[in-house]
Amino acid sequence: MTETGATTTSSDSSTSGQNDVASPGRSPFGARTMGLLLVVLGGIGFAASFALAWEKYLKLLDPDRTASCSINLFVDCGAAMSSWQGALLGFPNPYLGVAAFPVVITTGVMLLLGTRLPRWYWMSLLAGTVLGQALVFFLMWTSFYTIVALCPYCMVVWVIMWPLLWYQLVRGVQSGDLPVGAGLRNAMVANSGLILAIGYVAAVAWLMLAVGADLVASF
Image 1 (cartoon, rainbow, N blue to C red):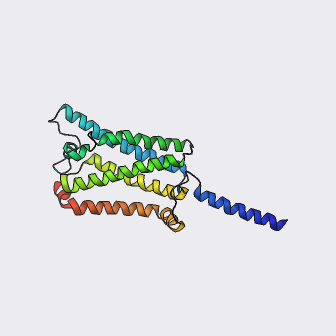
Image 2: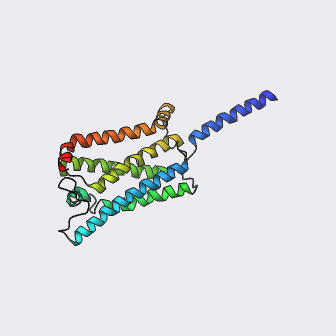
Image 3: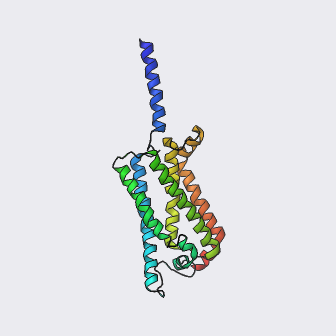
C-alpha cells in the first residue's frame, strides 16, 4: 500500500512538472509581468506612432512646416515621412502602429486581469509582431543606406519592437505554444535577458557602422 502510494505520488509530481512547463500563458517571469511588459511597450509604441502620424497630419496642412522631430539634416523625421518607404501600403506607416499597438496594450491589460488567452490568439499576436519587426528591419536599412537620415520617433518604435518580439518567443517556447527541444527552450529562458542585450548591441553596431560618422558629425 505504501509502495503504491509512493509510486502514485511520484507519477503525479512528474505530471505536474510537465504541466508547469507546457501550461498555456506561462512565461519565465509570470503572466502579470508579461502583461505589464506588453502594456508598457505597447504604450510607448503607440505614443511614438501617434506623434509621427500627428506630425504627418500637420505637414499636410502646412507643407512648409518643420516637424518637431527634425533636429538637423541628419536627425530628421521629415525625410522619412516624405519618402515612398514612409507609406508602403499607400498610407503613412505610423497609422499601422496607431492601429496595432492598442491590440498589444489590450492584451497586456487582459493578462493583468487574469485572463488566460488561447494558443491561436498568442500565435496571431506573434505573427503580427514578426511582420512588424520585418518592417522595422526594412525601414532601418532604408534609413541607413537610402534616406541616410534618422527619424527619432521611428527609432523609438525600433527600440521597443525587439523586446516585444523576443519575450513573446520566450513565452511561446516556455508555454509549449512553440514546440522546440528542451535544450533550446532552457537556453532561451535562462538567457532571455542576455540575448535581448545582444540584440541591442548588434543593432547599435549596425547603426554605427552604417551611419556612425554622419551621426557624430550631425552634432
